[in-house]
Length: 430
Figure 1 (cartoon, one colour):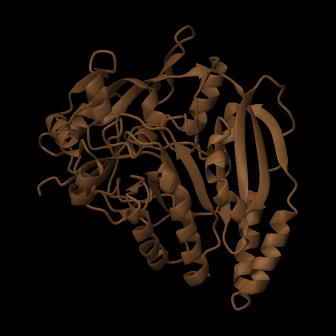
Figure 2: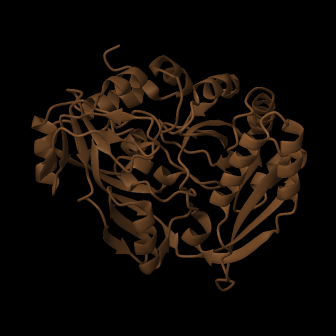
Figure 3: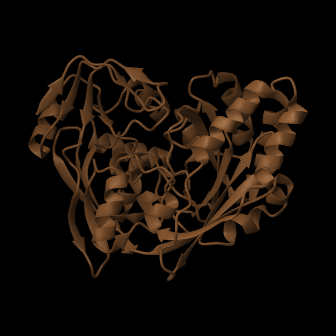
């Protein structure tokens, strides 16, 4: 086992830093059990560092489970795959496709590990498509005493629902088994439209395709609608990705036209309106994933689907009246309801709205102003993205929160996985 001590850890955005006494990299489950039992606590688990909340931060031990990665087994008949929890999504997509399988859905970032994506309810878009945790068939994990447990959806369905979204507080997952589907091709289309049309046709834009999302460009009067549908057509030429260049242009215009908002709107709106429609076919992961180099901080809330258009209208008005420094687009997606106890999508069709802010700039005032709109519509925050909620709030938002905490105590009775931040949001010791 590799141990590094002491060392500064930082997340991807750079807004969360920690100085743990050690970073441990166990090579197998026996070493993992020893770390959980004997290492200085709290013991927290690192994924790819793509969360914006202090889920990983610890003054004790940070666990790196990179050794628990790869495709362990797959069944071509049942379309199942057993995967190491430390496997990055970008690696997994290649392994699954080579085995003839595909994830039913994906977000547009593939840097997360499987364990991290499950821990925070990471998701893609599609009103009939669930987040990654809805694919869970089996979970293998080390509990708070370092003992290995295997939990099956077939024999313990309630336990899978309890731990499917776990924030790394219900043990350290070593491998999971997913229900997948045969590998497939997607037709991805993108078109610009006036933001008024996006708001008026909100439901049909998000429900009219297998998967769909749209990005509202602030100070432009326009949105970009993306749709994804399964096709049998051959793979076609993938146009060069221009998202990063677009962000640079939006930032440049913000800086240059700070005191000329009308000209900023005219130039950005005109440029977006002239964008050529995009239409291509690619293997599933090639259509879903986009490159993200510009670092940002993010707040995302999951609202009842029927509240999405109203909330979006309020947020956009707030941004354009009070926060001219914002240039990142808003991202709007939909997610199917599920039965996982700590899932933000628990028993309701969901509209997810994400707001972003340049990581090099202070996002405090902007996020503080936006959050009350999300909360007004009974939004549940993404577990890995910025919010101000505590255990009292989550107990009100999640009908089975108390039961989930009882399961957590059974798995980790000595609170080995509980940091001060986790104690605050889960109510441990309260």
